[in-house]
Amino acid sequence: MKPFIAALPKVELHLHIEGTLEPELMFALAQRNGIQLPYADVAALRAAYDFHNLQSFLDLYYQGAAVLQTEQDFFDLTWAYLSRCQAQHVVHTEIFFDPQTHLARGIKMGTVIAGIRAALAQAEQQWGISSCLILCFLRHLSQEEAQATLDAAMPYLEQIQGVGLDSSELGNPPAKFTQVFDRARALGLKVVAHAGEEGPASYIWEALDRLQVCRIDHGVRASDDETLMTRLIEEQIPLTVCPLSNTRLKVFDKMADHNLLQLLERDLCVTLNSDDPAYFGGYLQENFEAVAKDLRASREQLRQLALNAVQASWLPLSRKKTLIAEILTLP
Ligand code: ADE
Ligand code: ZN
Image (cartoon, rainbow, N blue to C red):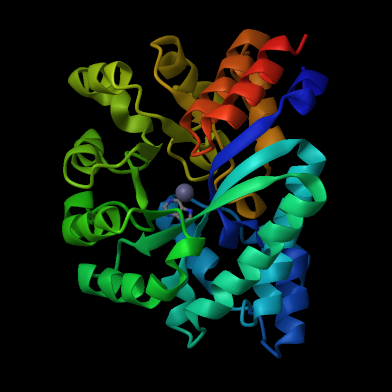
């Protein structure tokens, strides 16, 4: 199955660029910027990647992001991820970034966006990899802080296609951000939100009804609520599911327990994604491989997952049609 997965034109819709910071690059950037990391070496850092829930991961993830300081750092980070895309035949990617993590350390919005955008432009030119950029609000912070973040992004709106909502889910329901999402939509931005990763199915309802999102990030808890399942199926609202992430963060005890194929078999628009690949043990190819191996997904199921990602993307219809034809004709 590996060669089939490798040959599939793949689209990624749930990827935090700060979550692609591999330990080696973290150490290199720490050295470049004169920052002392609280780990002796790469092996010690990797050994700390033993998570028991979302929060235990987020604590390390925010700590690691502190090595990102200059435009060049954001370029190098994004370029490293895009090089993986090129190697794995990921042809389009819609990338999250967490500006509040950086603004809080005195880094300018323009620095973050310029570094990421320069890498995206070079990958498009050099490899034909297309992309979108999604600004995420940190849900453990207030709506006022999210509004201030959107204010800071106003000069760069042309370079951002959407907004999202991430970080600590439990106790921070989507409705907390209703006004800032209203404002983002009025500005013409597309909107998505993490919901139903650790949080209950009611958060998915809120993301749909209060934030009016066009996709749900994760959403695996939808299976707890049959009425919600009917709605997601009827409206074909995509779920950006992240299998390796879900097992590493103990949303499911082991891959064999994951419900994504049950959701797919109910005709939900399920897509596969890597979330924070440097922390969870694999990029998009490895997520497909894990689903093939541990869930015994068939070739046709993997093909459907790849088709769903094209459908759920923000690509123009003409490119969607081309990619769909390529995926359907792959032997
Ligand atoms: N930020 C980075 N990865 C995340 C995830 N899986 N859930 C919520 N916030 C995140
Ligand atoms: Zn995520």
